[in-house]
Image 1: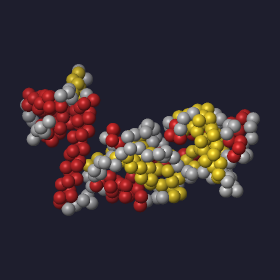
Image 2: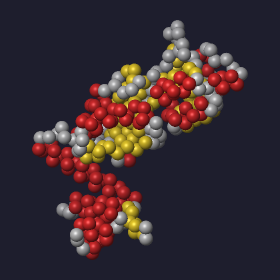
Image 3: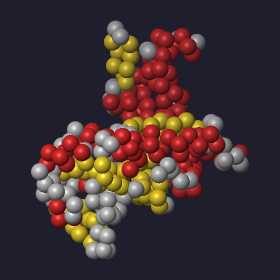
Image 4: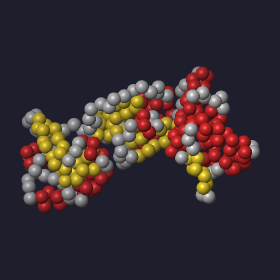
Length: 308
């Protein structure tokens, strides 16, 4: 497919049509004829081979193909800005939009302080954050960096997972659950007989926890989930509801531990805490802003971080 010389301008025009709410509004904002704007959008749709806009009485919005093209256009413009900055020799002046994803709840506890200091260093940089508990593939969703928090299992083809830091994990339960369970929980062997509130990132309905007791002996405990969820916040809520035992990052339950709503169990045992990973494409050329963010994160200690 031959790329039109006007592609950059056409992509910018498509963005203007969407942001202003229609072809007429875009034409008025640009001081040009509506027929000219309509013809250029039509030519762009013909080149793509798909409709890019849906027009209705409520305005104009992009089709799925239009959304993908708009996203690509934003990235192309950002890369062009970065290339111009590099040519001028001011690579330190990062610009454009950095798109990241992160688990719900973790942004507040860990990422916001780190990202705020990064943005303070680069006033021309914008940040677009998608908070989701889904496992995001940055190659499929146009994300520069997907942050994952937990106990990462295995490698995914074509992706790099860079560990930013490790945080203290806690085994805990609600006092009401322990009072009603009818089973002691004093030794590692007791844990497998209790209801488990599981995080989907750790496996299916049957999960395994590796613990080291006070004597240095390692134990592999098989656990059956009473509740299994993809949200760490929901794991906390279910254990607060006195439905079972779980493991969580300390940062998520410090207030509840202090208030006595949750208590530590098997505190004499140790296990590997969760880590924060930055996941990005192995094959993709990483913009300078992504490289700078990764360097910044690894040069700072996040709140409650116990290991880099």
